Amino acid sequence: MSNRPLRTQLRPCRSLASFVSRSAGLHGAPNAATFVSWFGANFRELCRGTDRDLDKMADILGCEPTEMKKRVILGKRSTRHFCDMELPKSFVRQSGNRVCPLCILCDEKSGDGRMIVRPFARLTWAFEHHNVCPKHCKRLVILPSLPWELGDDFHLRLRAARNSPDFGWEGEYEEPLAIDRYIVARFRR
Ligand SMILES: [Zn+2]
Image 1 (cartoon, protein in one colour):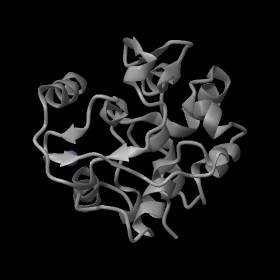
Image 2: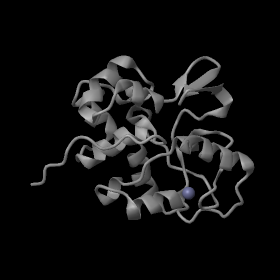
Image 3: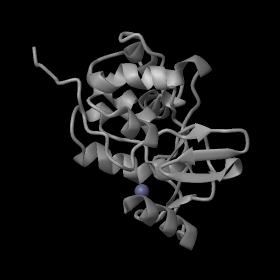
Image 4: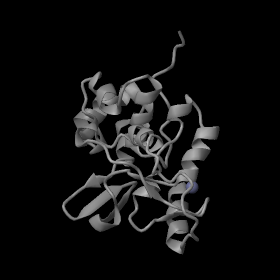
């Protein structure tokens, strides 16, 4: 039996939902909601940036609560706040349901950890006006939806996409716009 540490790295451009979902998968939990419940926290509240749930999971995941909160899209009535930016609500998707299919395939080839949980969700995919990956010139595709109680569980969505014969892993070729390049460059700083 191997001993896998509970901690994996929370990198700057990754969403917290994807990071926690990945941690759940690395440790064989059936889904992120169950994994987080083992420690007395709630996955949907964690992804909303609720302090109680962030504090409960921070030590388990080896992160500072403030760093975790930067990777959450915080919703107010008409604005969305994350990564030190405040944007109109219509600019940001609350749910991490879009991906570049080739970024996912690259993660699977070169990422760390078990094959099935190597990919991660980029925060840039949450921008409503970012539609084409500048690295791969592929239009972002929408992952299958999940029952609401499972929350924004990225790896469960990927699993559902793999099981769907209609899911477009090839993606459509498209030239990125200046806004696509700007958003990705802004998050790499
Ligand atoms: Zn890509």
